[in-house]
Length: 265
Image (cartoon, rainbow, N blue to C red; front, top):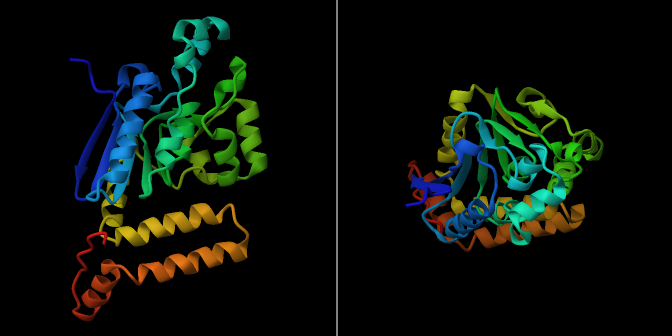
């Protein structure tokens, strides 16, 4: 039986998604892209999942890029690499599927996040990196460029100038530098990367799931709106929350001095 390329374990309203290709650096190929997209759709449809964590198997790589990037970096010409993969396998997206998850998504960057691997991390809402992780877009050194949202998501996160420096230069940076420029929010020892992300996810999972989804919608959509439009969106979502059973439960729990039992309704 072929090894599963993506594992998903749900516990305490948290889905732990693991890219399960540690022997080849968890690179993105057609099978992994397909399985990850299916997993993202399942998470969106599972009312028992409030938060998701994405990580890579092993200790060396979160995701070290795409199969195409790997072949070119190994010395194959771009044409030869494309011929080897076949037209259907040249470009497969993973970031869009992760970004479409309506619930909070945390990247536990347990190792290198390079090329498409960094694009995958950028599609998550929060990034926690191991001290040993390297991050970057090395594609320009091989005559390629990011193709899964990297040129769009990176400048929105760290600013145009620094994003261009990283992408055009093709260099990798340390986890510590990534935190300084705002690419990741925490840097922890390698052995603690997944558990730190899981602890944050479990804490989030005690909050009202509808409220968290609305917060994510307000922030993400608001980035592409004017300030006034964003404030109106926030107000609309705020009033919608008052129609939910979770809001009623939150008020009742406060009055009764107990922890709320949110159900996402």
